[in-house]
Structures are given as structure tokens and as C-alpha cells.
Length: 382
Image (cartoon, rainbow, N blue to C red; front, side, top):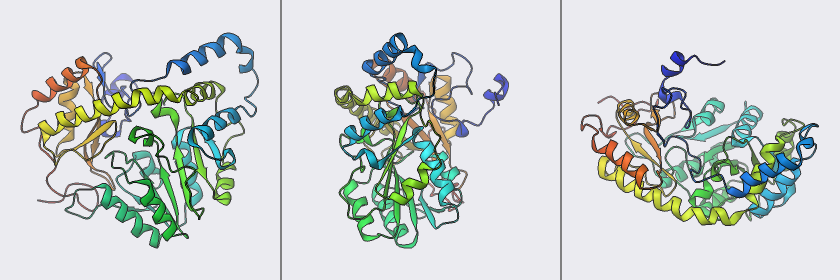
């Protein structure tokens, strides 16, 4: 259902996906730091591939895309260094989350929170594993929750790097948890792993058990999020067959396939822009730390940073007044946190706009979340 302009403007910002500017007046936002896609994308080669396809092969749009996903999966397999037969095509990581949540309902499932809102909604029936009351979450604490959960559950779901914190658990530590708990399957959303560094995906991992599932997508990595494509990797044949049975006959659009395949076939582009992304994100961390303090900014080395805030609505509104959109989290429901997630600006003008907005932020608005999170997700009573 389409929202009217007045309905859109009154939506709770905490329920608006990153990059969705329909809750703002047209032209109000001049700097969108709310979406976690690569703001330097898409790769020119991918754009040119789509232009060439539309110019030279328009007739291929007439029939259904019979087996067209095979070329895309071959590019995924080459990019990740995995066996093509261990991959399934998905319309983004989200489709994998939706299908797996349906297949696993009624089983023993744990979800390490906080996590992506979509994941928490789909796995609403799972046991939510939060950081202990009074502690600020870290990658080390998340790993400990993974280990404990795998001892007591049939399936454990985690994002790594995490959304929204950005925490990253080294892959070898997750693989060791899989080896120690062969009866539990670890499902890892690695949508942001290529922002963390090159060759860090767990897909194709040398593991003597089949209890690992990796969900990944080129979309955010290459700035192609609007073109929906992703993949699932696992050596668990039974689970792979079950997921495959839930997919459509033609799982991906031919246009999506053209874009993502061309991007994956151009690894030099990502290698070239990754250092600039890292540099921008570290500069962002310094700006946020100077304004809110080191304890407020979640430790990460990814293309965004999360700031723990007591009143994220007020900071969100202040930045909006300066033409900047960020992703807000209200911390009021199970598994959620309170704060804002900010994707790194790029270029002197964007950094200046953000810096000016933060410099005029009133002290009483910029309060850091100092109280621990309540077990139900909101702030604990004082």
C-alpha cells in the first residue's frame, strides 16, 4: 500500500529502513548517510554491461530468464572461491532470512542480538540472546553468546559483521565454534563482510562438518542494493535442498543478473575503492568520538559507525534539520538498541556538512546512553 505524503512524514523514523527518504519532505535531505550500501558504487563496468545488454539484446527480455542465474552463480563461485554446486541464488540476503525462518519454525533456534530488524522480525520465535545487563556489547561478548547458544540450540543465527553495531568476530573463531558443536548449525549473515576486508567470507571454509550456512550479497558491496541479488552457501545438502524447494522457478531478474555478474567480474574496482571507504569510516569515527565520547561509539572497522544515545529521536531530528539522514534505533522492543547508525561521508563537502551539524548539537540532546539496557530491550529504570 502506497503512503500519502502526510502518512509518510508521520512514520516513526525508527521503523524506516535505511535509505528510505519517503518520511522526509522532498528535497529536505541533501546528504543520505542512512543506507549501508557502498556510496562509491555502482562500478562503471556494471553500468556499462547493463547499457550494452539493453542496446544489443532487448529481445532476451521477452521470455522468462531460463537458467540465467547460472552465469551469476558462476561469478559468485569464482569471486568466493567455492564450488558452484554449494550455492543457491537469492533475491538479496533478506530472501534467505525469510525462507530459513519459515523452514526452522518449531525448531530450537537462537538469535544473537541486536541484529537487523528484518532478521529479528522473521525469527521472532527464536531465543534472543542479548548482552548481559549493565555491559556494553562487544565482538568478544557476541562470540561468547554464540558459543553458549550452539551448546543448547539446533540453529544459531548471527550477522557478522553485525548490524547495527558493526562488530566483527574473526572467522576462525566462528569455525572453531562450529567444530566444537557439530549438532548445531550456525547461520551467518555476512552481507557487510567485504567492507571489513578482502577474502574474509566464511563461504567455502575448510570445515570437517556441514553445520555452517553463509548468506551474502554483492548488492551493498557494489552499491547495487536496488538490484536484488544474493546467495546462500552451505555444504548441508539437506538444508540446501529444503531452501531450494522454496525458491521461484526464475529466482532472479535478468537485469539484476547482468548488473551483479558484471560487478563480480570486476574485482579490481572493489579493491580500488576499499581503502577510501576505510579511510572515510575512520575519519567518521574520530568525528563521532570527539562529539559523543569513545564509550558511545561502538568499536568497529567498517563503513559505518553506531552511536549509543539516550535520546536518538532528538539527534535524528537535529541532523534532519541540517539536511542529513541517519538510521535511528529506538531501543524500545526486544533485542533492539538505542542510538543512530551513520554511514561514512565521502569528500570534504560531506564531512563539512556533518561536522557543522554535530558542532551545533545542543549538549542536552547529545546524551550518551549511560544506563544499561533492560532485558526487554528498553533502557533500565534509573
